[in-house]
Structures are given as structure tokens and as C-alpha cells.
Image (tube, rainbow over all chains, first blue to last red; front, top):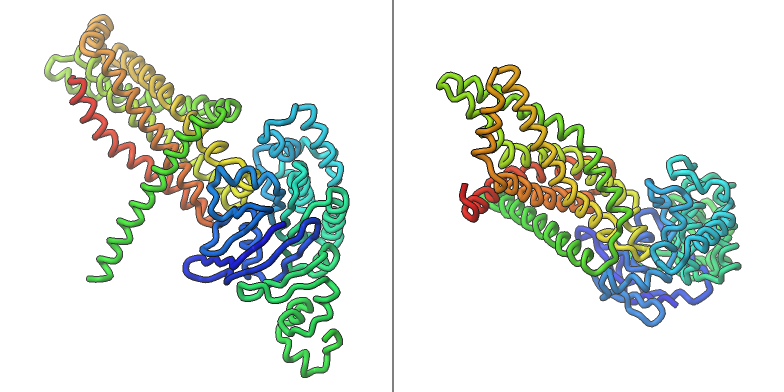
Length: 255
Length: 261
């Protein structure tokens, strides 16, 4: 379980997170939605200690990771897989070596075991034939899938997805969504995804949490979020620039 | 007046914080080198990139500096009938000062820029965060191999520049200035000593550390976007070049007080 307690973070004096409280239960996939620049990725990076908060705590299982040094965070981070927004593949390595990287760093596996697990991970994401390619030779969708393979190859307990479908066409985006669902069903991982793609959120989420003005504004299942009468949530999930105009024009079918 | 003082304080504060950042990186690298398993593959790759691939630049710089130094001193010394002093002058100047400094500057331009740009790009494309998210320390995986490679590579490049400059100076002195090769060589050996070579090589070890630390620090702290990476790269070259020139004076003073000429 991941527990976030009174988490606050500012950049250059501008508050981004203002006392976030939230819990992510084992085995569920939580999608965090919210406006661009609203602090979703910042919140995600706090979950595995990539950012340190100004105030508050993040509990991963029984450990408060906030006071831990980089060295003491390493064993905690081995519980996580992270799909970055731009995939963050290492340019100098082939796709195979990128996916093998977390296994080689653990120094627990033989090269034969690594080759087998990498092949499995690439198979899951449909890139079995592309292992020899460098990241620069891959399309955006292939890079996301490769990033996903690297995130899951170490069999993490927690998977963090930063904008997993952003920048992809609807078909590629749905492929990624299906992959996330397959990974959850196959490996029983706890997932936290950050997105403003509502189709993706409805498809992969067990619960959706909306981050608004630095705080968790609403939490619910996809159907609860769709049915809510909260104007801020409705404005966001319907993608309306000015919700009051929609109300006056009588277009309130989902309220 | 207050604005001027505020700006001055800000500049001093920035300089101190940069210095502190470089010092912390140095301590982290040293701790990593003593507590983590050495990364031979990455270090050898960096020795190849930093050392082997810099040879052409260093050989050309050393050779042509030795040649021009021999021509200029030869023409001046000829006026006072001291032609055979060209050898010792070229050798001592190259061994103690010019070879380590010019090699350091060339490597700061070629390698320092490359390190800062590579690490800066990794920073802005979240590759550094990806490393950290997998429990791998960027200092261990990226900075320590580059630091070690420069510490090995730069003294070897400096030695190569020393040799090239001396032989190139000898060639020019004998063939263009018609100085007797036996006298040239004899006088050069008579007035130079192992401590002159040691002075240059010891300097190059310090210069290697400065280049690696400054370039890695600038790369790790690059601002977002292409502009941020460009700025980090420029700063890495400028700051490491200036550091080499300034440190050269102080290292020379300290070395001369320990081992007098």
C-alpha cells in the first residue's frame, strides 16, 4: 500500500501540491487526472522518491520514504516500475539492453535468465523483433511500449505510468491501455497512472482521483466520477472551457 | 546602490553554490569509487571516447606548438648566438606548462562539452530520473566512469603531447634553423629532468579532475529544454578552461616551492 500524507511541494515559491492526502491499495489501479501543469507528474515522482516534498510523508508499505537518502531509497525503488512520459529510454543502448538494464543492475541473474525475461517482456509489448534497434529508430508508440517492457521486466509490485497514452493516436493509445490491463491481470501489480486522457482513465482505472489546485478534489470509481455533479470534475471530464455556458444552454445531461 | 549590492551578493552566492555542488559531487564520486563495485565496461568505454578519440587533436596541438615555439625561440636566440639553447627552452616550456595546459584546454573543449551535453540531454529527457527510479545512482553509473577515465586518459594524452612537441621542435630546429642535432639533444637532456615531466603530468591529473567534475555537474544540473543543455555545455567549457588556466598558476607555485627548479 502507498499512503500519501499532507504532501506539499513548491517550485520557486509557487505551490504545486498543497497537502495531498491519499491512499493507494494493493492490487488496484488508480488514475490521477487533472489539468496540465497541475502537479500530477510531480505527485507521481514523489511516490518513489524521485522528488522530495517540502512537507508531508509518503509511506510505501511500512517505510516512510521521505527522510531516506538516495542509497537507502534503492531497495524501496526496486519495488517500482516507472513508465516515463517520453519513455526515457537510454539513447546509447539497444532496446534489448534498455529492457535488460534493471535486471543487470540487480546483479542477481545470469545472462541467460536476463535474455529469457527480456524476450518475454518484449513479447508482451509486441516488440520481440525490435530488440536490436536503438531508441532513435523507434516510433513514439514503440518507445512507450519499450518503456513499459523496461518497467515490468523486474516484476515490480508497483507500476507508475506518467501520461502513458499522451501523443499517441487513438489506436496506439488503446493498445497501451490493453497492455496496462494485461499487465495488471497477469502480474497483479498495483498501478498509479497520471493522465488527462479520459478514455484511457475510464478503461484502466479501478479508481480515479482528480488533482485540483494542489489537492485531491474528488475520488471515485469511473462510473462515480462520470455521474458526479461536481462542476469542476464535470468541466474536466467533459473538456469544457466554460462550464457555466454549458449549464445555461441546458446541456447538462450528465449532471 | 542596493540593487548593485544585491546583484553582487547573488553572484557570490551563485559561485559559492556552484563550488559547493562540484565539491559534493567530488565527495560522492570518491565515496562511490570506494563503496561500489567498479564499472569496468563503462570506464573502458569512456577511456576510449575520452582518451583514444582525442589523440588527433592533442597530437596536432602538441606538434605545432612545439614547432612554432622552436622557430620563434630559434630566430631570437640566433641573434645572440645561443642557438643550441632552443632545445632546453622548448622542452622545459612544453613539459612544465604548455603541454599540460594546452592538452587540458583542448580536452575541456572536446570532452567537457561532450560530457555536459550528453548528461544534460539525459537530464531533460528524464533518463537520469529513469536511472534513479531503477535504484541506480547517476554518480555511480555516469559520473564515476567519466571521472576515472579522464584521470587515466588526460595524463596519457599530456605525455603524448609532450613527446610530439619535443620531436616536432627538434625536427624544425634541425631542418629549418640548421641547429646541430647533437648539441640540441645534448643540451635539452642536460637542462631538463624527470621533475619537469612529473610537474606536467601532476598538473594534468588536477586538470582531468576539474574537467570531469565541472562537466558532470553542469550536465546533471542543466535547465529544461535545448537552450538549457546548450547553456550547460557552454558553461562547462568556459568554467573548466578558466579553472585550468587559474589553477595552473597555483599548482606551479606550490610545485616549485616543494621541488625547486
